[in-house]
Every structure is written in C-alpha cells, then in structure tokens.
Length: 619
Image (cartoon, rainbow, N blue to C red; front, side):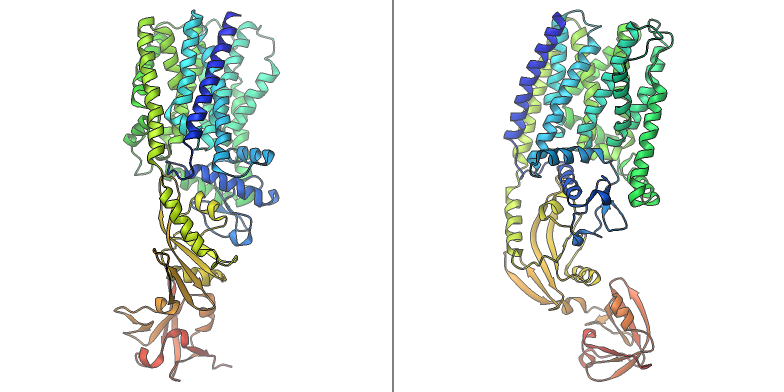
C-alpha cells in the first residue's frame, strides 16, 4: 500500500512537470521557425490532407501524397511510387504513423495545422511518460528496498523523458512514426514484464491471463507496421527472454514467453504490409522502392559516417546525460554479471531488448544521422540505466549524480529555447506572402505549378496543390507545360531550406501557352514579359536562332505533335517561301533536330522554326 501511494505521488509530480513541458513548447511555438526535420510534420499534414481528399477505395489507407484534384495526379514526389491512377505513395514508412493523426483530425474536426498536430504529439508524450514510469517502477522495485529512493529514481526517469532535447522536439512540433512507435514499444515491454510476474506466481499448467497475452501479440503485430525497428524489437522479445531464462533457475522450468506467437505475429505483419502496398502500387514497384530507400538510408550509403551519428546523440541528449549514461551502463552491467539473481533477471528482461533496438540506428546509419527523431528510441535504455544507477549507488553518489542531471536538464531547456529563438525566419514568410500575393490575380485554377528544387510536404500543403519539382528555368517550364498540355505554367524560384523543407519564394515565372509569352516576377515585385520563342530558339556556336550553322537543318520542340508533323519525306516551307525535303529527325532531350536537303540555311531568310509549315506531298 505504501508503494502504491508513492507511485501515485510520482505520477502526480510527473503530470505537473508535464504541464511545464507543454508550456515550454507551446509558448515557443511559431510556424515561422526553421527547425531541423520540421519537414516530417508537414509531410504528415500533407498525407492526412491527401487521405481526406481521395476516396478510401483508391488509397486503401496507404500513405498517399497526391492531393485530390485531377491536376494533382501524375506528379512525382521524391521517391514515392505511383499507382495506375497517378497517385503517389510513400513507401519508406508504413501507414499507421499517418493514420493515427488522420483519425484524430477526422474525429475531432480540428483544422489541419502544425499546432494541432503538435497537440496530438503532446498527448503521445504524456501517455509515454505514464508507461515509462510504470516500466521503471516495476523494473527497479525488486532491486531497491527503499521506497523513497525508488520514487526519486523513477521521478528522475520521468523528468529525463519530459525534458531531454530529443523529447522536447520529437514529442512536440516534430511528429513522425517514431513518436508513436515509442508508445507501442513501451507497451510491449510492460506486457512482457507482466507476463513474467504472472508466471512467477502461477502454476506451470495455469494459463496466462488472456487479456495481457492478446495485447502483447497485438502490439507485436502493430509495431513493424509503424516503424521498421519493430522487427528488431519483436525478434529481441522472441529470443532474449528465452536466452536469459537459461541463467535463471527460480522461474518455471517451462517458461512461456510466447516466442512462437510473437514470430507468427511478426510474419503476419510482414505479409500484411506487402499485400497492402502490392495491391495498390504493385509488388515490383514496392520492392524496388524498398531496396532503393534501404541502400540510400543505411550504413551502405557512402556518405554515412559513425561520427555523425555520435554527434547526433550529443545533440539529442546532451553531453552530461550521455556521460552519466556511460557510467551507469558500466555499473549496471557489472551488477548484472556479478550479482545475478531473480531481481536482476526481471531487470535484464527489459534492459537488453531496449538496448538491442538501438542497433537499428547503426543499420540505418544515414537516416539516424540526419533525422534526429530516429534517435528517440535510445531514450528508454538511457533512462533505465540512469534511474537504476541513481537508486543503487551509495546515497552520496546518488545525490551528486542527481545534481548533475538537474544541471543537464536545465541546459536542455535553455538549449531548446535558444534554438527556437535563433530559428525565426519571419522575413522569409513575408517574402513568400508577397510573391503569392502578386500571383493571386494572374494564375488560373487549371495552372501547372513547379519549383526549382526538391518538393517536400510544406510546399504542397501550403499551396494546396500538386507541385512539380526540379524545374530549373523558364524554358524547362515551357517544355513541361507543352508536354502536359496545361493551360498555364507557374514556376516559383528561390531556395529550399534543408532544415525544415520550407521554401523561400523569391520570384516567379508564368508561362501563357496561347500567347507564347513568359511573365517574370522580378525580385523587386515588378513584372516583365519575354517571348518564349526567343528563349527556346537559342544561339551558340552550333545554332543561330534554332537554325544549324554546320548542316542544313534546324530544331523544334520535342513533343508528340512535332514528331508527328516533321516526318521524313515531307516538305518544309520556310518564311521566304522556299521548300526543302525532310531527310531525317532525331530527338535530343527537349529538342527535335530536323535535317533537310540542300545547303546550310540562313536564319535571316528562312525565319524562326516556329514559323515553318510542313506539307505532306503524298497527299
């Protein structure tokens, strides 16, 4: 009874501390902050919007990134894979991490916004804090006789989970699958712990409680669908308890860890994931995408270095915390191997699986180095070891370590506030607003939109439309508009902020196909007009206004209609009335080179290729 009351007090204090962490994050919140990996949250918002706008009969709950209008289809998006209807699907992570916030927004009717997504993430953080407190309390309770020291150790565990830099971000404004997966993983560890406690007090033939068993296997099925680390977690839960039980003689002779059932749940999860994607995008496309993303994000990538990952851990948890973790790791491992007992067996059942899942950061080295939320999973073994260290070392050492932890947490809070203040990019949002305001009355609803660099979730979500990426200049826009037969083309020029995926719009081009003109918004907000023909029919050492200098020929846009028009054997009629027979054509990127008979042509006499006509002499 005394320990139950102490646990309640710890929960109460942690809940009050959580309110402080909410204030810390909400008071610093602004959409004009350039925060590292913020593109993850905008990616989720874009997918939730796309899931809402496209019927379930089409996307089947897969993470779609194409919005609902017809003009949003057939637009490539990063490494996403298309279906037969031009919708693109994200394959690097499963559906559940997107469906969680989707269901929340649908049920609550809340508007799709970064702040509301953060509220969802804060709720996850509180649930994770409660589960962590229960896990730490149950793990340390057999090892620490003093209720006060157990309470202090568990409270520090909660404070570390609430105020570590990684938690402040990855359970705050940065939401990705790892935030939700941590909750599932904590649930799995708690279920395992409960199963072990039940076996210790039950007879060998008495069945395990059905509710705990069912939840344990259900979480094992869900875990890999949220995050690939779930596969490592499930394998560790299937085999590590069996291995550890071999050292322990006080548990039943036939321990029931549900290893076969966990492996079956994992296999079922694999089958479901592959069936789910393959039924929409095809098996081959899905497998190719998975393979490509693995090689791009793993330690096999030539740019991935371990130093970057280590530096990332310092950024996520702070140097002082990691120092205490290293000391705690040595101390606890020494205790386990030198004082092996029933109590250390219970503790080890939780510790070693929680450590093993962090191996995923090494396997997916490139991803874990760049995306800090991938390092969130390491917080569980860090906290487990530090809280155990505080509870088991002599009281003087425990007080000293606790003081260091308080300083570390204070530095985390200060560092978080400083980073947020330094990340303000209000001036960029003002520039963006100016550019979009200038476009307001000139862009038609049917217009095709494009940007110069890569497109992340922020661009699509902000503009509320599909956007073509990597269109370098006005001429490339012309070619894209002609190929898509769009009514108008808009190219936003500027730069992509790599931290957040936010785009800095500095100018724009509008292409009007019917007028054959390009309107350019200069950086000062002034519109200028140029002929698209003058841009296309270039002059250099080989060409003069689209006419070949070294042979009898010219080039025209490489489009379906021009290929069907300039057929060898037909006659070309020039501006001066002269005719020449087409000998051959050859595509060269966006150009279609046309060779005619006779001598080299004179641009001054024949005019621009756009003025030529073609006669089919067979008719």
